[in-house]
Structure formats: structure tokens, C-alpha cells
Amino acid sequence: MLLFLYGSLLDPKVLARQSGEPGLARRLRPAVLADHARRPLRGTRYPTLIRQAGTFTEGALLRPGPAALRRLAAYEGAEYRLAPVRPLTARGPVRARAWIAPRWRAG
Image (tube, rainbow, N blue to C red):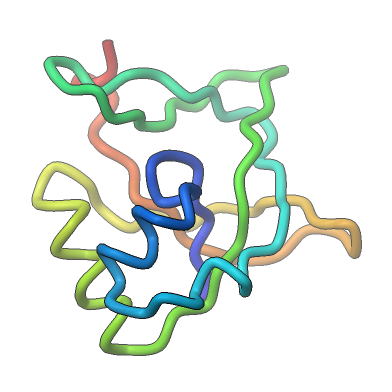
């Protein structure tokens, strides 16, 4: 599964610690998600995405293995759901998923 990351998992140290794979950050590829804005998740220091026309969120794409994906899902927790997104890369749009909380949770 291809993931679009836009928050704390962009930090190589956080990604390594939470995925259990120290070199995973080397596989990150830049991407931008159009018509989505990064907003703080109410009551936390973590972000979520909301649909907002004319905005762009910079992030990165990653294809983790099954074990890393399970660990990353546990890190994201029950507040986030994997939602389909279409980020843009240097080669055009791709199908991916991003962890996004319900809109009402955005601050």
C-alpha cells in the first residue's frame, strides 16, 4: 500500500522508531496533495487533513512492508482512518492512502 505522509512520520527518527525499520526514511519520495490543508487535530500536537479548494499540502510517499504498516497504524491510533487520496509527484498523480481524522476533530 502506498501511503501519503504529511506529519510527524516525515521525521526520519520518528518514522524509524514507529515503523521498527531504521532505514525506511530513505524510501520517502516527495509529493503534494492538492485541495487539502493541514490542520491541527483538536487537543493534540498532531496534524490532520481537511479538504479545502486551492490549498496544497506537502508530504511524501512511502510503501512500507506489512510489519511496518501495522506498527505505523498502531502509532496513528483509532482517531485516524486510511482514506484514498491522489497526491501529485514529478511523474503525475498517483493513488495512495493517508491517515485522516474526521473533519470535526480538526482545530
